[in-house]
Amino acid sequence: MTFTLVSFHAHPDDEVLLTGGTLARAAAEGHRVVIVVATTGDAGLSSTPAGRELGAQRRAELEESARRLGCARVVSLGYPDSGMTGPVAEGGFCTVDVEEAAQALAAVLVEEHADVLTVYDPRGGYGHRDHVHVHRVGTRAAELAGTPVVLEATVDRTALQRALRLFGRIKRLPPDFAAERFEAAFCAPDALTHRVDVRGYHRRKRAAMRAHVSQGDAADRTLALCLRLPAPVYRIAFGREWYVEQGRPPGGPLLDDVFASLR
Image 1 (cartoon, rainbow, N blue to C red):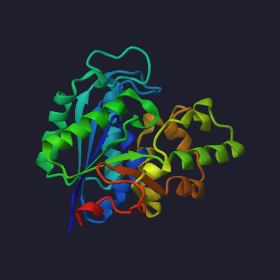
Image 2 (image 1 turned 60 degrees about the vertical axis):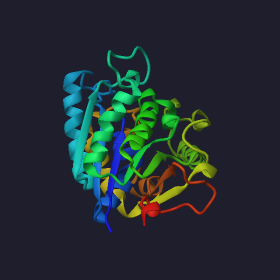
Image 3 (image 1 turned 60 degrees about the horizontal axis):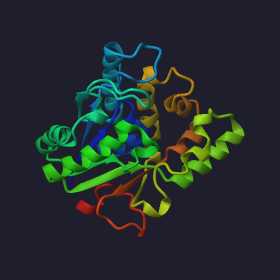
Image 4 (image 1 turned 90 degrees about the horizontal axis):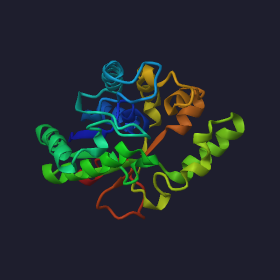
């Protein structure tokens, strides 16, 4: 039995960081995989000036990333990138009415007959305002479309902090990556429902990361730091991806199958 997985993200490159291995695995197993991004990514950090030119470049990078992961389709809702901090651009995604954006996403879910939708956890992971809005919009869109399974892509907070402390002993990390900064980010282990083994797809995930050239040229970018990891370390660090399934009580054995509730 095959299913359709729609993965909803805030910006180009987000699709690979938290869910790239899952998307590659699902595609390799014969499922239809669709990526939807809310924004153009035109406010991202890059040597390319922010604006339309950067947005066009990031869309092309997203298409290449999706190809490397094996995804069937990419959809952009086309909202302006709100940026991490500072004033929000006019029409920035985080300011868009939830119902309006949810209707746009729900149309894709209905068209694709989506079985599973991925969003982010309520914190938006590390608190980016567009990521928080992805949670709100995606949850509402699934209600409108009747999508049966919604998975909140997240990270095991304890595992993340442990890894950052370890890597910090080996190589100096930028202050933004101090383990203490993630005390309230992502999810505690006891809130998780899924831990998906994607070790067999780490090469595809890394190749998809490399597709986002504009986001890999800033030394303090998450993507740039990830790509500098030696291959064996990268496989350990990105060999699993975590989710919380909405409506599924936590506390049981962690599931390795994002389609488990449908089988």
